[in-house]
Length: 56
Image (cartoon, rainbow, N blue to C red; front, side, top):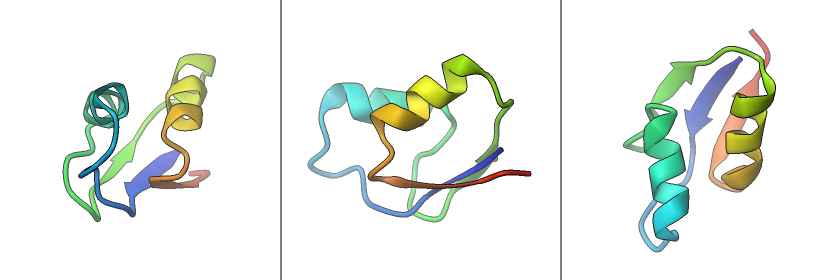
C-alpha cells in the first residue's frame, strides 16, 4: 500500500509525529510503500487524518 502525507505534522501530538516518521513520512507530499499487514494498518489508523492511502 502507498501512503502519502497530505497534511502538515505541525501541531500534531508527539506520538502521531513519531508514527509518521516510523512510516518514513517527514514532509507534505512524501510517499512511501509499506506492506499490507496489521501493524501498518494500526499506524495508518493513528494518523488517518494526515495521510492518503492507496492500495498498490
